[in-house]
Image (cartoon, rainbow, N blue to C red; front, side, top):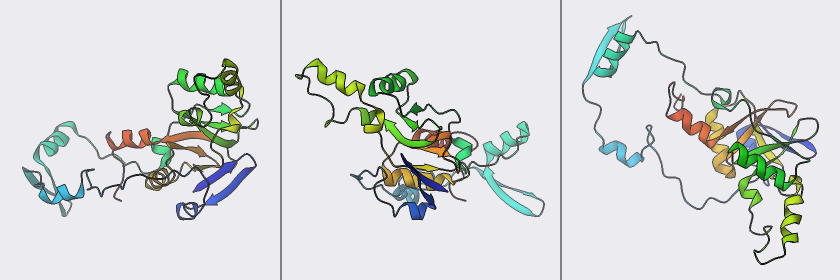
Length: 228
């Protein structure tokens, strides 16, 4: 389930397919085509030329056969390892303690927070703790709003004193924790956003899922259930 929140509250609630029909939610133009990828993340064209893993052996048991690389099979037998549940939901990979900004914050306060916490973005919340926008470092450095270096220092002071509500992305898409990770990845590709706030039905932010969270899950164990 996806949502769109703005300064006036919840503006949308629905599926990924419905969300993709909405304009004005922070969409950025894509400048290059995404090449087709194989199941292991390589170019699909490489799959046909890549030989299968050698040294595979079949194991029998419980009336069925399975095929695994011999080294992996030996490891599982010696370690007594059990198969872990693949990750498939936003709640499996999201950050549970997101860095957030109040809508009363200034540009200076926002910049200091993002820098001190080493994050590239932060959901913006109103006084009730509800999502109203998303602020990124890119928003803070938009060429049309950053004063020219030759301008008087007062211009910079004016910029730093501006409220984040004037430059944040709003309305902004968000997602429920029980949503499919693959659908979140599609929305990130569609919008160009670095991540999505994770919210409940009341717009309360419980986490944040970023591109980095998804990529990190891809290369760790247990794996993402990308092909289920």
